[in-house]
Image 1: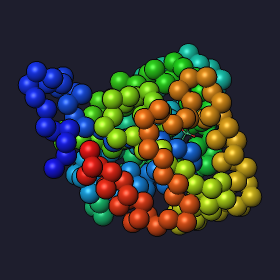
Image 2: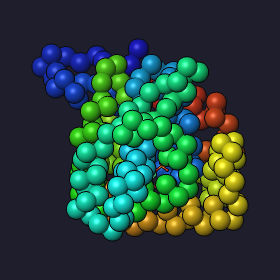
Image 3: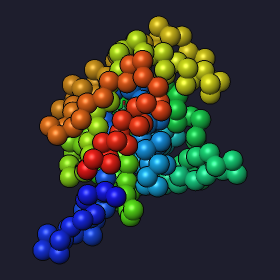
Image 4: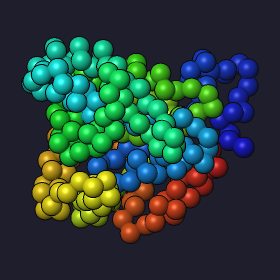
Length: 238
Ligand code: C5P
């Protein structure tokens, strides 16, 4: 079905690069997580939520009382991250850090802000690189983040850069948090998202930017189903 499986022996890729990867990058609230999950489910692929790893580093640092400015210690925290992604009885994802369920804490705006601070540190990004690449397993991987297509999987078969208007992104995030029972004002959330976007785009290492060969998709006003279908049509064209 997918063209990339049709390879001749002479150009046979190495074991890892033979596994197809689809990347989703873009700013907070652009729909990456939701669309990536739908596409992974439709294709039966594994899923990497790379933002969760940066969030986990921020949480682990908090638990170990490591300051978010302490680069050396933060890199050590990132290297030693003891994390498990599991499913509960209802099939929902449960994230465990040092054996403790941190699923809810992981998604707060405070953890997101901590994540974007630790994500500016090159040694932290380096420490997470191999861990992210280890998610690349047969039959394929859908990876979502900020630098998936530019840095972590530059040889991805399809790179999607998702955007949406700032207003819509803030509203989506607000709804997501409300659905989880977390109460945040929309105005405060808009400011947080703006700050985080600025930090993510302006940092020197692996900043948020589209890969040269990325396909752009503006999700403003589009349904989840429509966006998912557009991506699946692109996959079918490969
Ligand atoms: O996507 P999510 O909101 O969970 O990401 C949290 C933060 O982690 C982002 O704001 C960004 O600073 C950082 N991040 C990153 N590179 C990635 C994924 C996330 O720098 N690939």
